[in-house]
Image (cartoon, rainbow, N blue to C red; front, top):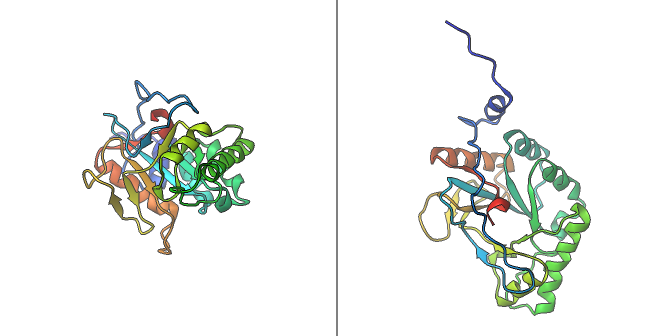
Length: 235
């Protein structure tokens, strides 16, 4: 009986993180969604991506959780995640997100101070969105294309201000993962499916780490024959 060949890096990685199998590589979308011209028309609001690819999209908000081992997880599993950052929450922690970006994470806009934008005047909304665009450009050299309004609330003024700040899409979510690791669904089927955008909520004092919540989610995806796609490739 021949001995099994030694495990390669990818196999060692999924085993080390407790996955039953390697993550399937995400396909490149054949026709990415065209972005509207910034400053000319309101950007679309996206809760779910229309695609037949068996992918979902993992998103993380605010920037309060800065676990170095999560950076290791993203790197070793080649996990395409998108992080929507709020300047007042990140504070002095931008170096952590620079490391995440260096291993492939997308860095996107979640305002300067995390206010509920709906109903605020244009000048205030524009200051929150454009101000964080400028902060992120100064930190990372690139102005984000995607914006998530805090609490998922917005109005026509939000979309106009976002367009004037160079945003090409407002990104919400169809599925939220709670700090305790459960899933809630905003309409549609009560299970994960192709094109779902998942918002992984902050810890609620359960002691379940960001790594632990993400791992639970990855196991659920694999059971449904899904993998993780890069949001920025589709929106």
